[in-house]
Length: 89
Image (cartoon, rainbow, N blue to C red):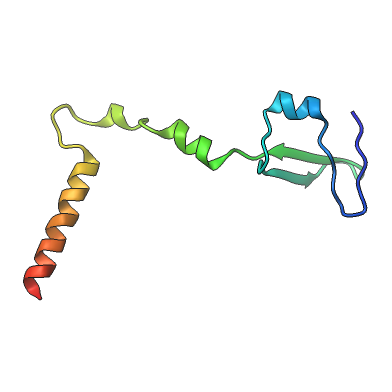
């Protein structure tokens, strides 16, 4: 596949690659100089939203059975801090 650099330094990614790589508008691509003088290496950067979604729930295996959920404990701690601040005013 061959593309041409435009006068505005733009390149069109061939449709076959877009489909195969599942690229969407807004996809970030990193461009790096290659090992040879006439070589450019590019790689698709991971989508932050997709990364975050893939990590959801991964720490659950470390929760102790019967223990309070860490987020619930944090919310309770913040509520207690707020209550104490209001008392001190």
